[in-house]
Length: 295
Image (cartoon, rainbow, N blue to C red):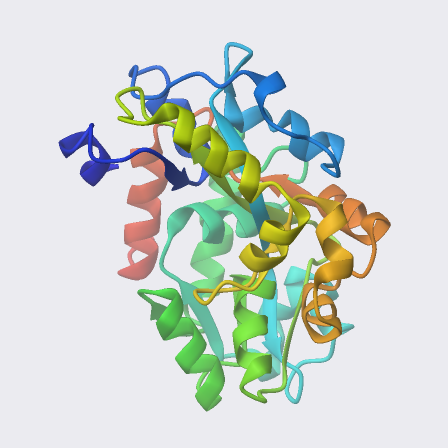
């Protein structure tokens, strides 16, 4: 966002997580997108509607791919059944083997679900925030390491230094499985958090028509299949027509082999948002104290 703000005419198109649309659009930084100008063929309704992509009913972002923040784990140390609930993080054999991703939004989001804030994990009152803070406090002594970047998380799971990481998902498991590591992921029964990548057109885009052409191409099944396995990390296509184009091993990693499975996955996830009833700085402060073990 800092780069975007400093160079407003530098970009024709920007790919961001949609929670930041809620800041960029009211600040006048984005060009509104006509929903009729893009293709929604193959998009499940929840991805087509994409509430975080809209401000006052106006569309500003088009979803291109998504994924899960749930639990990622070493299958030689943790069974899929054990990982079916976040309570596994407090099991005796995992003490000192838990990794934490150092980004407060996804990590506090899944732990908010674990704390019982199951309806809207980012829209919680003072009591809900107290429950989340208490849960963080109880987890802190069990944590082996806090990973500054996803690369650190991958390395720790690869070496066996950590055995399980909340807020991980297919985007972690895909890369490690490709390297032959026994790693899987799951959305626990309490639910998971959905990350999403959306295409935005800056208000000052030098070539908005070209940007729209890119967005329409990126929504095609062929482009969606490419995006699903892009080098940085795996993700799910938003267009269900891309699923048959994915290699079988990729569909296995994504746990998606059909449009019904993709729709079911979407239904198990809550869209990642900025905190709705507190200033984000409040959550960030709790997170910093958690890292410093001063909760």
